[in-house]
Every structure is written in C-alpha cells, then in structure tokens.
Image (tube, rainbow, N blue to C red; front, side, top):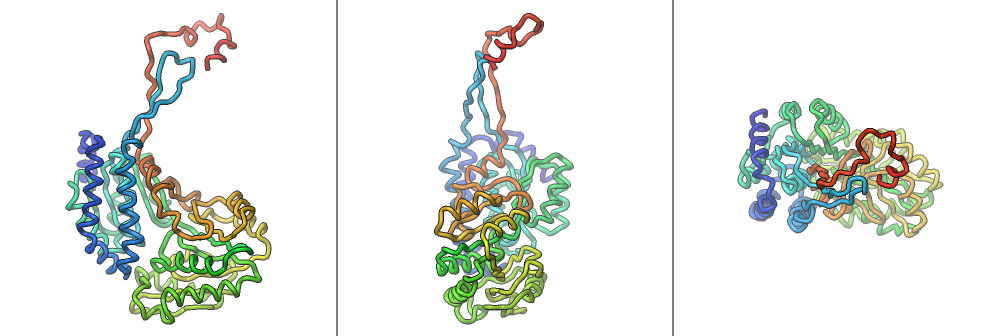
Amino acid sequence: MQQTVAAQRRYFESGATRPLTFRLEMLTRLELGLARWEEELLAALKADLNKDPYEGYMCELALTLGEVRMARKHLRAWARPARRSTPLAHFPSKSTVYREPYGVALIMAPWNYPLFLTLAPLVSAIAAGCCAVVKPSAYAPASSRALAGLLGRLYPPEYITVIEGGRGENAALLEQRFDYIFFTGSPAVGRAVMAAAAEHLTPVTLELGGKSPVIVAADADVELAAARIVWGKCVNAGQTCVAPDHVWVPEGMREKLVEAMGRQIRRFYGPDPLAGEDLPRIVNRKHFDRLCRLLESGRTAHGGQTDRERLRIAPTVLVDVTEEDAVMGEEIFGPILPVLTYSDLDALVGRLQGKPRPLALYLFTRSRAVERQVLGRLCFGGGCVNDTVVHLATPRMPFGGVGNSGMGRCHGKAGFDTFTHEKSILKKGRLDLPVRYPPYGAKRISTLKKLM
C-alpha cells in the first residue's frame, strides 16, 4: 500500500495530471472503455446482485456516462482561474482564485451500486487532476474484478489503480497518508474512516445513509405516489442509499395507498415476484437474514415471501408498525416498506425535526403551501417532490448528506470542487500606500474605515 501511494505521489508531483488536455483525454478513455467492455460490466452486476442488464445500464452505466460527458463539456470552465474584486486598501492589486487538484485521492466504494458509486467520484477526481487509489467492495466480487480489469486496461497504476480485498485491505489503506478520501457506505464505517483520516488531517467526503422518509400529504395523487414509491423502494431490491425507507400517510388514506402499492407491485413484478427475473437479490446471507428478522415487525399487507437459496425477498408492505418496532430502528436497505400514519402534518414535521437528518426525503403533494412547510422546516441531504430517488440521477445538481447522513458533495461541478483546492492569490502592484505601516498614532481610523 505504501509503495502504491508513494508511486502515485511521485506521478502527481511530476505535473503529468495537471494539463486540461491530459484530463480530457483520460475522461474520453473512460467513456470509450465503458462502451467497449459494457457487456462484461453488466455481467458482473448480474453475477453480484442479479441485476437485469436494463436496470444495470439505467442505474449504473448511464449515470456514469452522464458524469463523464458533463465533465468533458464543462471542464475548461470549471478549471479556469476566477478573478475576484479587491478592497481599495490593497490598491493597486488583483485577486485571483486558482483551482488545483488535491493530489492523491482514496476512493472507497460500496457494494450496492458497485460501478456507479466507484466511477462517479473517480470521474470527478480525474477532472480535478488527481491521482486515485480505488477500493471497490469485497461484497461485490465480480464487479470488483471487472473494475480492476477495466481501469487496469485504461490507466497506468501510478495514475489510477484498483486495490481489491476486504477489511484488511481497507484498514491498511486508511493507514496511508492521502490528500483526499472519498467514502461511500454506512454511518458506522464512515465514522471509522473519518477517525483514520484525522490522523493525517486528511479532508474527507462521506456519502452515508439513514432512514429516508416519504411523506404523503392529504392532497397527493395516490396512484402516482404508489407507483413512484414502489419503484424507488424496489429498484436494486431496496439496496439504495436514498431508497424510501418508510412512508407517512394520513390516517384516512392508509388503506387506499396500501392497496395502490399492491397493484403497482403486481404490475412491476407479477403475481409472484420471486418467480421472475426483474427483482435483484440481496447481496449476501448476512443481509438476507437481517431483513428476514425485520419482516416480523407489524403486519404484512403485501409480499413477505422469501427465497433463502436465491437470496431474494418479494417487495413487502408492512402496516400496523410502530416507531419502536425493529424495522424502524435501523436503515432497512431492502425491499421492505413500513407504512405509518399521522393525523397532523405540522406535528409530524415537528417529530421528524428531532430525528437524525436523513440522506433523502420525499414529499407527495399538489400544494405549494405544504411543499414550503415541509421543505422549509426539515433538514436532509436532498430529495424529490412527487417522485423518489431520481434527484441523484443528474450531474447538474450536487448530491450528498448532512449530519448523520454524511458530509461533502459529489456529481458534476460539485464533484470537481470536492477534489479541488481553491488557492487564493493577491498580486500587488509597486505603488505602496503608507496607511498600513507604523507608526499609527497620527493616522485616522476614519480614513482606514473608508479603505477597508
């Protein structure tokens, strides 16, 4: 590990990664590589998570290509030095902010979207001019091998390299001194990453998770809400950091919404979801068993079937759930959706204010007043009004958490900024005003106030 980081640091310090022409060429190389080895990458997703190639392309490769193309299109503008105005006290001078890469970055990726959540921050690191050590998750071994093969064919190891392995390799990497660490995963591991980074005062971005709620207002379009909630919950079998974790619905609307969700589940996955191939599987036995225990909460309104051999769980809607039940005590990260009720929206918002800040929140309403009430009072990473999940599918908006759900931003310009240090330079002319020099006794503060 030490030799790998040292080799990358030498390469970075040579200046090879700084020219924009180099960065653009490396981005183009990645775009071409994704197209050339598309089938291999989609096969890896199928092997790890039983992702249908359509879902794999839609939720991983297409989003990665969007990041690459956005960076290529706007890189010159993002990297351009920016002039700033200068106070009169500094006359004559000019102020400029230069954008330079941090250096050698560590990108630690999760297993749930093993391609996109590895390559999206890598695109930003390349655009910024960094070198990068990439650490995929051992829980998605086929994808890890595919990423090592892809990036190994495209880039020399002193520029971009992949380190495969599990916890031992993670721990060894975190002992090294990096210039930036980008981690995506659970809050518990995020705390350990941040503690390790503190040893070297390394800046970090933490993309974590949390219990992302859905609020269905009394005026919501129930059928539309049901379709979009079920889709957002079941894509990747619910193993999505911004998946709807649970739903809050007015007491009198619960049955209507639950019935509509059942119709949408049958529409998407048929009368027996476990018999089809559109439903991805749970990543491993440990997580499967954890989810099966959560199924014991409340009462099952739809779904509940499991296949232990194939690690699959049918989309499940739970009712009669309380906030003390096990399913409400942790991020679900699976195709299980508790539906809870509320009687007063203002009171619900007040209760949610006291909970850890989630990575996402989703609101279904036709009322601008309700939208202002919820969005204005609740703090969360990002979200949607009248949809779920798709806010992260655009490189034109920053994405990230707040508080327990993370820190820092990624995607598009925000991702470029993450891996970029802004260096402020004031260049002074030869004229030297005497107002700043001692002795101060005869100088008037009123004159100084006008200049500052």
